[in-house]
Length: 149
Image (cartoon, helix red, strand yellow):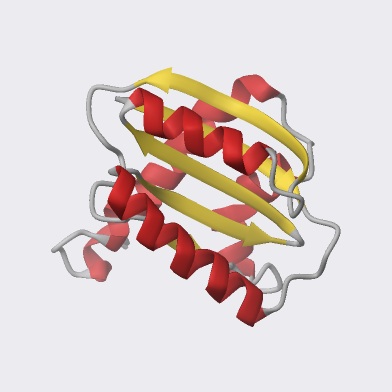
């Protein structure tokens, strides 16, 4: 099982309609290819985790690298994994509002990665943060158990 994490910027200000089209297409195609992952869109940039069998993941990343919507594409993580981190998301999606302090705190690391302010070696840290986000989203525990006070 292969996992890639990349970041890129876009010159275009993608509106909600364009993002919806990207997401609909990604979910459909990823399900057919057996690829799961997460896509973030923050401040005109993308952070995406792709995971699945080696060949489909590499082929998809090659297509992404040729997509004119992506500028300054940077691969931050390329590793073998024992199992999927996002098994139920053919393509999870978040467009965090960075003017909200709680959201900015949770996705601040992703924002720094998108803007090139993290070294490529920090990909594992970013992946761990996103896996934690996924685990919380899919937990059966009431949310208040996460905030013991």
